[in-house]
Image (cartoon, rainbow, N blue to C red; front, side, top):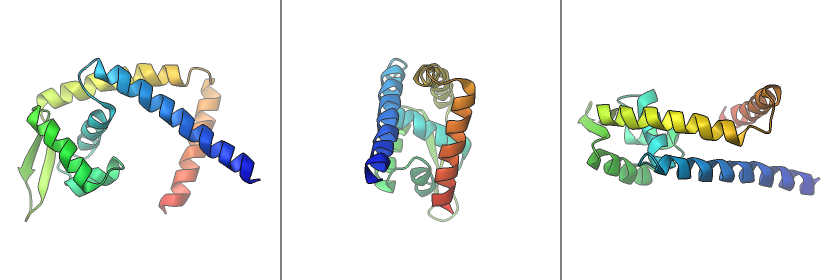
Length: 139
């Protein structure tokens, strides 16, 4: 039994690794990285969020996210504004919106290629199964 579960775990990790490498490589052509694009995506989904909230949304530590968003701010892609109390809110700038949009186009192309071996019905089933796995863990 453990051999099959370990094989499953490795297959999921291998698919994720290949997807991340392909995305990082393609995103570099538009001047960004997967981590940066993911941060822009998280800020776009929840404008005004704190670094703690965004770090959780991007599966990073607060310190790592702080370093990353500092680079994005230095590039003029993200703006940090004072919020309530000591809270710092994060927002995309117009150039950040442009990089995000370009990244969406790149990601759509890369992911279409990554999942091209699976027919639509299988992709839908895989998505459903993975959502069920993660929902059980997040509750």
